[in-house]
Length: 175
Image (tube, rainbow, N blue to C red; front, side):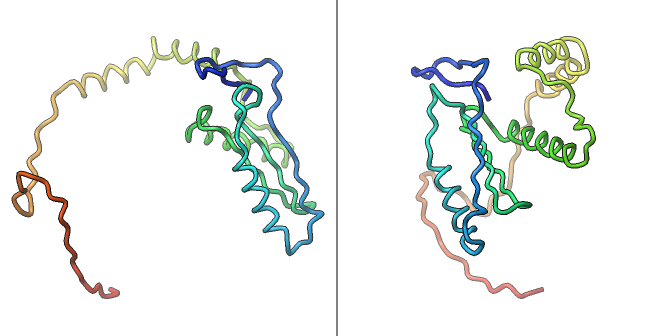
């Protein structure tokens, strides 16, 4: 979340003190009946805002306050720094932190770790433990040639593909 991309797109630059682009947008001042439209407009504006790869974090956080007890959290991440797996981790951690803040309990997240430390730990796990055995097993299983599967065809295929299509009309009963 402290990473920018060089102008040539070749390097990641991790900044020691780059703050996330986080803002609170107070929509509680808008008339209650107009808040859904105002929220939709704010979300669209956020989605249309381009990322500045060199100067700005590639992860944005917006909290829209609808009233004292109702807020909408919006996380926007450029696809160059996120994927479904990493975003699911962020969401899981946010839920854990929110729950621990709400109940006053422990989040259970453990000690924060830099990516380099994570890579070293993963490498150690791979070289010695169960990961190595699993990898060996699957390499052996997948080394065997796959069998050829002959599936029955509904009609003989033409030598040249034509892309002609047809329609089939059927009425489906409820049951």
